[in-house]
Image (cartoon, rainbow, N blue to C red; front, side):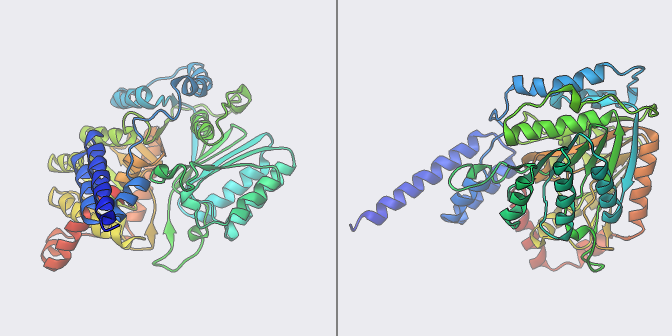
Length: 474
């Protein structure tokens, strides 16, 4: 018995060494590799538990076969091929090809878009479209709270299900840990097909806890699609000045709805393991929409071979001619993104980054501060939004390209989460979203580099640098 503790120690050391070797063999970014090794070394027992839940790399796993993905894409590809007079602008043709080659994202013309910059307008529009649904409603939301708004949306869905409309709902399991199961059971009992995305139940699937579905998508009858950054939660409708949430969401009618539908049905395959490819989910476009507003819905995930959205952002930053404006609630950039931002700013491009003055996580604020200082030193203009918490994810460049969606400028969105952004190759949309950015900028203070660097205490700067080591894990 006297040697039992030595046996446990040997087993633990062997487990740590095996885990370190596994991390090294994953060939991740050096920063992330070092972060996990530090966690394992300096957090005994806790470190290996954290790695088991949040650190395992699934990018090389095949959770969906190429054959199934081809089946799910075939219908949207046929609709893409049927487009008449489709012209791809030379300015961004290589970017569109990048997305098409890597995530099967296809560009669609003939789109009309409504922009919502507050929850009141978005949720009223969503409820109105749900009320008019006749065939199907497909909804996926990272968070679907069981608060007053959540019950309002679920009641509307239940009402349509009882009328015979097909209703499918996906919610992220980890994002809704605080939501009572009875809330979703109530919808199931009413005939709604509800699934949690990658349920995390010990001991099964625990390694998937770090890979979450961050999408916020909805498709009504195949004619109307919603995409953006808003979850279903009361935080978008109330709160004090400091707590109020500002976000951006879009309603799309036209060809791009086919792409939003395809993104949902891929999610549905993950959640339900059923292939839905029927033509009825891709109806003919409504009459009256005919324009050159070109849109491409791009998804990225931890199981795809490459981080698609991150690669696109890098290309946009390095190819910009005049300006790049970015909004993100969190700023923990991967090294390629930070390098591209610095390079563009040093080259004289007007690079502006908007982040909240007060975030919803102190750890993220601490970890992000040193990245902000690096961006400032390179000439990036950093604006701190002070009229609440800005959860909006936008990028606009050169009055020609713009994007909105669920992806933040951080490690989690670029590498760990299932994300979806819609990219517009259209001057009109770029100018409209540019106005959203400039209106938000009026609610900001411009961060001054000299004051930020010189006035911060040494111990605070040391703490921020230490927490930065954990930024790939936040």
